[in-house]
Length: 128
Length: 150
Image (tube, rainbow over all chains, first blue to last red; front, side, top):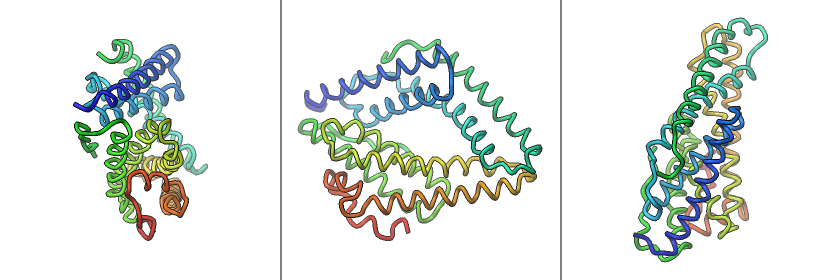
């Protein structure tokens, strides 16, 4: 077990990151959007990174549920970013050919967003 | 790539713990950086994740160690370039054959993003450059700017 000063410092960091995650979770649930999804995903990843760096010094929390949130938000984020990248690079002559793929990506994003909302609604506050 | 475990059991205080974490996370990045030269999809993805881990750690340390701020900011730029590249790597294999002009554009964007990442990496090691504080803090990275990402 690391010394008390490290534990105290690490607990302060956890408190801060958990608060940021909880705020992002609530904001996203109130009104889901791409920006709020990004904030939620980033706060979850920061919390996971904190766990990776300082797991010896912090109270244990459910990393499994955190991973689940990161995976779900990753699916929605990928679909959104790929759609944007495709639209950005799309040649005007190939617009018609790209319609199907853009539609599939939009659907993937919507499904992922629904799953995130459902998962977050059933999630208790962190850490548990 | 999984994050390496960090032993803090005999660390002496917060500064020592921060240094140990920064050394491990920076070493992970330095190990993976040949990906910038090789340009392989999987290796570049691993490098991006390692940059992100190091950046998050450094951002946590900057209130106590402001000299790490520039490195964290450079890692964020590097991560953006590698992220653009990664998005193109995901998109290219998913495109239908009818989209060959678009695919060509995406390949060019990928090359631009790779060139940007290489330049950001090389420049980070310049004297008094963005990684100066990180190198001094960890004692790692000396001699890494030359030719690695070329």
